[in-house]
Length: 617
Image 1 (cartoon, rainbow, N blue to C red):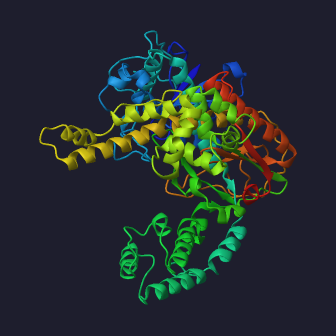
Image 2 (cartoon, one colour):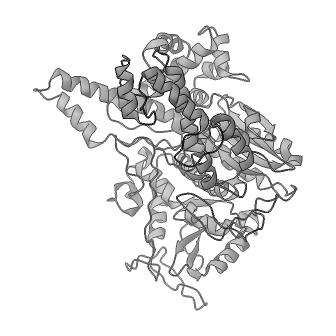
């Protein structure tokens, strides 16, 4: 059973229970926020087989309204996230949804050749007017019943959300392999629940430890706009080595000119380019860049902005990258540097269980391509070490470089030299990446294991390609077209691997979340934390809990608190740490079976049960 939830007027919500045939089980009901919470809590307290799948426009908008009252839901269908997948998937291109003219649901999914990477814009629009409909009389089902009950929405026309949900169900049903898409949509929506819960619960964070670590790295705290002691010492060394007493090393333009005056042939001031140079200024300059980045990204200002009452509340963006990987809207959760990970400290009587999927993308490639020899190399061991033991290359570093070259399209240097060996040893895996690259070079789409498809190149890309075939084309036109074609081929080569790995990770987290929710609450109550507002550009979000009270429903039970592509952290009462570790291991095995059936590939995990994040590395 589904329950469609949509926004009414004045903060009310409209709920509409429907069955798998999309027939209304009850007439739509308009509920106040408190009534909505009571309604959801009652449904979630029922037997599992009668609990609904909640259908709403945006999990990040609606679910916090429930979490703030201590209510968790088992499952949902996020219309926004699922629309992006179904609109662009090669499996649904003949569906009404895919063929429709662009509408507000597409505002978050427009990706061009110039935008491959983060897609962090989330759209906001009025999904319903006061009567919950668009006035076209197109009911969700022909046999809608009248109701005289208070709060009911009698004979309401189909809402924007209801129509979108119908189109999504139709798109899946008409797909050649609907099972793949159903799993992907369920996993994507479960990921949205996880993201909302992790933001709400927060990552345990000790600001006193953070301050100590910053002081060790940078020197004592100073006023904003003033360089800390160690940064100022490095700035003085840089000026001395470049013979420029007025140089501001924070200015890329000034630094670039100073490096050129010193006789260094630089084309940018990026760290990777500077590392290639030999000059006395390089060592202090690279150190300055590292510490300056720490100060700006995770310094004292960040700490005061993002850590509230002992918790860091990252604002994740599920599906924020075209491959399905997550992004963040603020706080930099996906880029926590090692220098400050010691500030992530479990509460007294609790532990952090940290799990990292080893060599995830190469293992995904082995399973995608059904390359049994490659899967065997990683069975029960480090995959790169297994490649060395198979005699393919001499060292683990060689194996890693060659494999990254296969997945990311590196054709020169050490990777290019080793690639032929890898192709002979694992022909199915390398053939898959090469096929994906050739498809991209032709401007075609490629599709992940469960059905997420790559974007098509933009109009500019096609114009450049067409110009190269013009009889008047110059050698420069042809070189530009070939370069652009190869770049898009490198993108599609990696898309299928990175996107399928993201799907595996979503299934992994969904399984972990499901099993953790069944564990009892046995932990000591954390210190009281005021949680009436969350920080960051997306907030504050008011009313998360009564000021001074502990946060429910995560105050006594294990729960996910962090995710980074192939790594998760669970905050758990110490008594359940071993149980949690086994849940994480089993969830990885289940995720592998969900995606790849009985293909014999191991998804190895490195697991550590620690008091702080730094101890796991």
